Length: 106
Ligand code: SF4
Ligand code: F3S
Image (cartoon, rainbow, N blue to C red):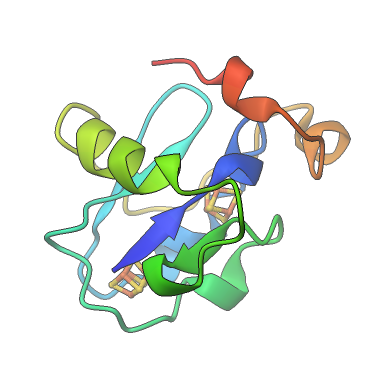
């Protein structure tokens, strides 16, 4: 399965949702997650993310392991999103900033 990781937080570019053949992205206030039981591992979303926030769970960068659980948990409570929308207003400014997990809104 694929996992949305920390750098999506406060960016939320949403390019990823447009290419997903099974519409398995779910949207929170400033972050998106992938439903692990719905993702078919097609890998189409990974190169679409301008923030490079999407990884296969087998290739997660160090320190991003908590996002496996977070994607699974939040995909159960957040609404589905299947159409691209504007990024968050300060997306460019936040892209690449470390420690964004503290900024996650639920
Ligand atoms: Fe959707 Fe494919 Fe990305 Fe999984 S890997 S979230 S199925 S686009
Ligand atoms: Fe987030 Fe990247 Fe999608 S920033 S919303 S995972 S395109």
